Image (cartoon, rainbow, N blue to C red; front, side, top):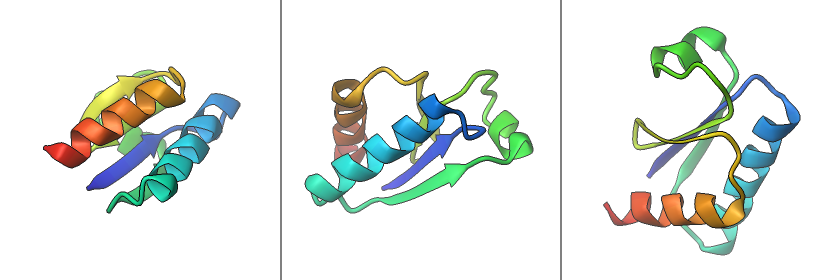
Length: 80
């Protein structure tokens, strides 16, 4: 599974990145996690606000909505 956090480095973006890494490690998910800060790459996903969670090249979440929602998105991403 390929996971990207799109963000400019704000506290919410950093929180999402940290939370994703914690969940991936705790659940022993086979995932490559990348923090994308380049604004051109972020905009290439059609995202106008950050943070955004991208799983397997699909934007699945905009904004930091908590660990439970992130874990749910990661589980769905790893299943499909």
